[in-house]
Image (cartoon, rainbow, N blue to C red):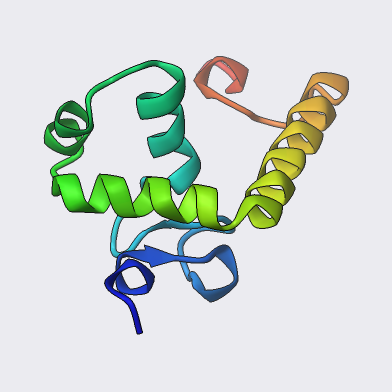
Amino acid sequence: MSEQMNTVVSGDESEIHDEPHIRDRRITVSHVHALVEERGLDAQTVADRFDLTVSDVYHALAYYHDHPEEMRAVNERRRELHDAAEEDPRIISGPEDLPES
């Protein structure tokens, strides 16, 4: 088994996420990808920010690119949830949706 498979847990194997994430962490592969490849943050910066190793960051990126169908399905699920939340005010999608006490 490769080290990458030890670093990243798929959504099917996870007890804490429904999408791939770094083992024993709540940071998802999609989030790492967004920070590094979409926002342009350096891998070391992401590693420092989330108390990861640079290797963890690169394993997450490799997983993202090695599993394109799974990542497309994750993105589609997120879009569906977002759309549902916009259509139904009872769905809480962030702190701003919580009722005031």
